[in-house]
Length: 287
Image (cartoon, rainbow, N blue to C red):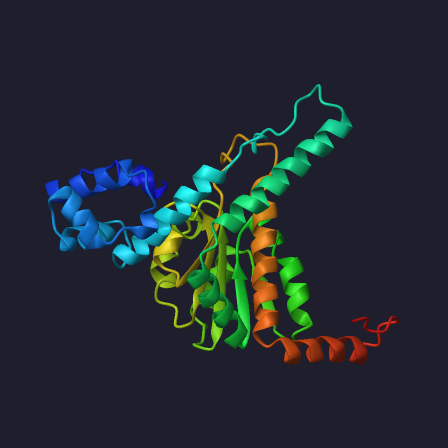
């Protein structure tokens, strides 16, 4: 559920918190310019009420909620659903039209994913990956399959990446994690690990935890340290394929690799050259 939708679900809120939630839902200006004091003055409540509302929505305070609201608002205003992500072509479409429809869908999916990236979250994820001795990627089915290209790229940085897509392996490896490791969890719904009854142990892992999940409130977000979002465009069982979500996952993993590479650019460029030279590739490294 998106944040603006959650502002309408007020059964768990006090009367004053409900007033603030309704004000934010209907506010048409730049949310980024609002302070807690501005909202309190406009709603005849208090700044502490604004903070409590943010915390009930699972944010640390108004600053975090404000950033999330602005991101979501920008995403919704700029979103153009030219192609149905679930059924992007029909039985009557010729091959050329199918090609164009998928081009539009994937281009739109990447743009929407980029709009959801928050600088602080990307920075946290980048540092966690750059500092990790070993990276574990947990996912199921197509989510896990998207990670193999990332694994291959990270080889050039001599950064070991292990991809795990078996529930029994999840439970075992969770108990062997070290503080210098980093875990990256991929789940479109954000509920995969909760459905596997692994949320409790996931939340206690000693290493940094990154989530790639759809832009909704879900269990995976609540127990990871850094969050990168996938536009929620697909239905779970009513789609031809994972066209939109797969391209979004690939894009986010490419962004993470590029940011890790750039974190120590010169050193990583040297590592890549050394990898190619020592593995005796037939072509010389071309700058």
